[in-house]
Length: 397
Image (cartoon, rainbow, N blue to C red):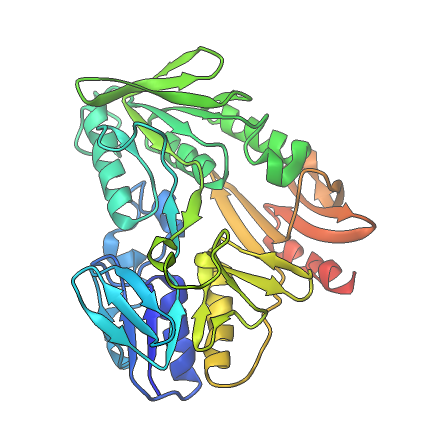
């Protein structure tokens, strides 16, 4: 029995590791679209972008550990089609790879603005290559080769389009680099649709205090350019935000284009049952998977590092015949400036938010999000240990 994993990032590597931990010794092939060895994506908007980490440190495992997993890594060759009945994946180079079980872990593709493609100075941030390009552009826009050197250089003007997690993280990192940063988006405050007005308002205050200019509450209508390079961002209100560099952080879509003719159900991801099975012998894990969560009685797709690892372990167990349902308590975190925010469960702007521990004025607190009489999420602001303890409220209710 053999396994083919389409996707060489966190979910794909975690599936491989879980299979080997559970004693699976048959052939495993890991197919990756990028040429890089498996690396971690969360640091791209933080430690890697600001230069604290190099490429080697972003790797999920050292080369010697990957070698011990005894897998065939086929990198730099994206999957282009899936034959479900034959369990065969075709690749861009013309390869045809078959296996008894196939795991789809192809992740996401960043959304783009109309007219963005081919325009110099405009970036998305999804891959290591994206982060490299952004770092080079910010350094070039500053007039200095090293963004960590504040002497005798102008501040590059960066506009971040998108007021979600990624946009806020990029804005925070860029301020650390000395950029002049404007954060633009339709919400009243960063992450307001997720965190609600109170917590999102605090996040907005944090960014403003650190020097980020907030141009929120108005959608972005397009980009302006001259000579093939971006010159600014146009708001729906008619205002224009001048920019040397623009980062578009408008979310991402599941990378399922290669599966259109496969016969699998594709609806905001690869639709799976509660065991993460999309078809007989076909599974999905990570950002691309939309599976039935028995505890919530709903289809769910999560875009975070923790889910990629945990879901991969469930998929590996089911490949080996365990028939295990996957029903986690969702968890994610974000680091912005000196603030760490951790979230267990599924918060939303329409939930009732109460402070369960600490104090908002001290910027150290844990909040509960309640809806229909149940605690649906716990959010901690600079209280990591206490936040983990409050997670128990989600299990009990």
